[in-house]
Length: 107
Image 1 (cartoon, rainbow, N blue to C red):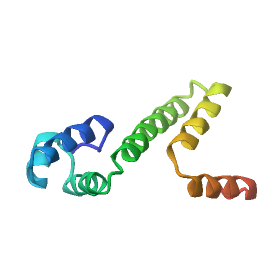
Image 2: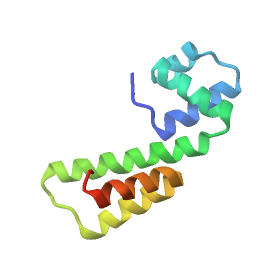
Image 3: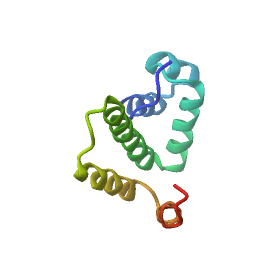
């Protein structure tokens, strides 16, 4: 099974629109049943755009982590880019919790 990505999410949404069941979606996309169910919940609630943004942010964070692990360093502006992406993706209450955690030194 592959990790849910923005691409596999879009494919799963297309299959949901066509009436495919979770089992068929996992076969067609390679995602897990749990991920297919999460896509369905987002589709049903009308929150697919938020889920896509979160998956795109996850991609950004994974690339950033890989860059740090490689030992190549981290450019100063990258930190700003990552925080801007977080602020764009998450709702206000998550941003507030993140800010409070950073101010208290808990993150």
